[in-house]
Structure formats: C-alpha cells, structure tokens
Length: 482
Image (cartoon, rainbow, N blue to C red):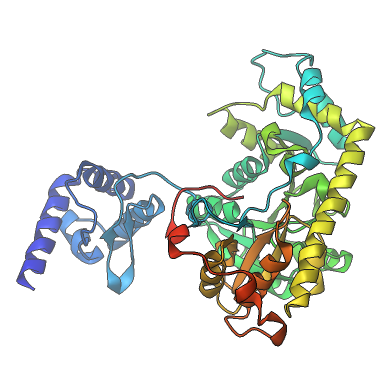
C-alpha cells in the first residue's frame, strides 16, 4: 500500500511540475507530451480529479475536460471510481470499430466478414476513365463543389431538388464532412441503430453525444425518434434506401411518421445511401419535405467500384459552403476525371444493364444462403430477404458464434460493431460467391443457436469439421473490413 501511495505521489508531483498551461486544453496537451515522451508510462494510474485540480489550482471540471480530450485520443481510459489510467502513447485518433476485427489467419475456408460487391459484376471503368480524361477544366486549381457534367447527371436522378451538390471522395468522406460541419463536441446526435461501423467511429471522434434510435422491419422506430427529439439533437442520421447492415428499407408509412415527428424541429437530417444504384428500390429522401435541412449522400463505391472513390452529397447552401471550407484544409475538390467518368457511366444504357444484372445475382446469392439456412433449421425474418450485400443474423451469443464459426474456418463480422445498444447478431457477407454453401449454412445455423441445434442441424459439426486452433485468433488487428 505504501508503494502505491508513493507512486501516486510521484505521479502527482510530476504532473504538477510538468503541466505549464492550466487550461483544459493546456493540461491535455502537456499530459499528452509527457505520455509520448515516456515520462509517464503506459499503465500508470493518474491522480484523482479533485486531487490534481487542487495541486494545479484549477476546478475539477477543467481536469475532467482534459481527461475527456485524452480519452478521445486513446491516451487514457477509465472514469469515476475506477480511476484514470494511461493506456497508450501514440496519440492518434483511430476508427477503433472499423479497425478492430477478428484476425482469422490465411487458411479460412470461407471469409464472409466483408459485405462488398463482386468486382466481376461492376461496369468496365476503362472507357469511362478515357472519357473522363477528356473533360474540360483539367489541371485547373479552381475549387468547385461538383463538376457540371456530374451535377447535371445527378439533378435528373435525385429524389428532391436541393440547393447545392458536392462531389466527395467516397460516401464515408461525405458523411464525415457533413457531420464535421454540423456537429460540435458534446452535441446530441440521434442515430439509427444498428448503423454503419464507420459512422459510429466518426461520431466518437467528433465527441458527439450519440442517442440510439432502434429500427425494425419498416425503418427507424417512431417512438424512439420521438424520445430522442426531446433532447434536441442537432442531427438525425439514418439510411433512407437499403440499410447496409440489415438489408431492410424505410416503408412509405414510416417515412410519413418520421416526417411528422421532425416537423417543427430544427434537427438537421443526414441520409446515407451507401448501397446506391445496386439497391432494388428507387431513391427516396426526407429532403422532399425538408430541403432546407436535409443532407442526402449517395455513394458509387458499391455500384461502380471502390476505386472510383466517388459520392455525391446534396445539402443546403450553408452546409455545402461549410463542407467546402473544411475541404480547403486538404484536397479541396474531387478529381474531375472521376466525376466526368461517373457522369458518362450514368448516361450509358449498358451501365443500367450491368447494374440490373448485378442486382439479380446478389438477390440469388442472398436467397441461396437463406434457403440453405432454413433447411438447417434457422428461419430468418422476411426482412433478411429484402436487399443488400449481407445477411443480418440474430444469435444466442456473439462470442460463441464467432468462435464456433472460426473453428470451422468461417469468418463473419460481429454485430456489436454496428450497434449503439448491442443485441447479439452476426453479419454475413453475400456479395462474393460462397463455396460449399450447404456446409457453410450448416455451420452458421449451429453457431447461431448457441450450441443447441435442431435435429436438422445434427450433422453440421461433422459436415464442417473443426480446424486446428492455430488457424484463427480472436485477437484484434488493424485489418480494414467493409
């Protein structure tokens, strides 16, 4: 006990001497510098808030605010009675949900953890890029929100008439730019639950106070949105077309219910259409009702390919100006070659044929796995049949399901990455072809039931034998999964 007291005293003395700027930000910066230099080691327990505040001659709220900033950068962790501990020395903000996925090694029989499109089903970008290279205005340093050809192509295909369009380097950059413009640290943001992994990472990085709005088979639940709106969120964020995690959609009736709740509020609406033009339903937006406070984002990564690196955002002029201002800290604009290539693709009849074929193939792959799961006693709700590049499967235990499948050489994505308030699920990708479909389905059905298979699943373990433990690890790594 005496050693612990001595260590605590040494840490307090070190901090009192090393912190020169006695403001919230100054404390955070000086402590961060001491952690990075090694003066304060990883694993060190920090003094109590009141104790450090007294030593520095500041309020406890000032110290608490500094700890909050350091938690954002993963330099410290913990809170309350358990205390604050130094947990890292890099000081880089990382999208932890996006980067923290199971590492299963190189011998997986079926990697279904990625909900990505099949490159074989995407349009040929060669002719489009050649046309893009001939567009006017190349090599100009003029910063523009969107090129004229792409703006014209979007205007006739957009679900409402917005004040401004902005081209961005992909859908998640558009989401990030929109939220960065609209959300201040501590702002309340209402988010459809589950949602895309990187949306939660972005909101955490921005320091938002996130409120869950659970969804059902018709979209975000009105009663939860009503509850969230009582806290006056600055943004309501949801997916208006095909939901990227569950494959569901927002029904016409639910759109009306959401609109009625949002009427009379100042809450901005951010709509993420990540699946884009491989979705089976036409685009729809609350921008039809609230054009002056809706940001609608459509990505082309799933339909035209991720290397096109393109999305289009519509927004009120004030928000679009704010997005452009943030972009001026970096790239400034999106490649005019890529914008012109996308505009050219959108006007080609062959593109429509390719996308229609892709939708058919994804539907076939989805239904093939769902039918096989049903044969093994795992009947999924009808919403699983709707659309998308994955199937959202409820499980008794996520950990049991992940370990059981990994032991049989099958990788899936844990559902807790997508949830604000976790309900056990796994996400199974169907965008790419699945070999040995029947045996894969048998293993998934077994894993989903927590080890209590129906009679029809009795042969699942034998059909998909366990692999040596060396071929998988449930530890974290930095592999990116979509």
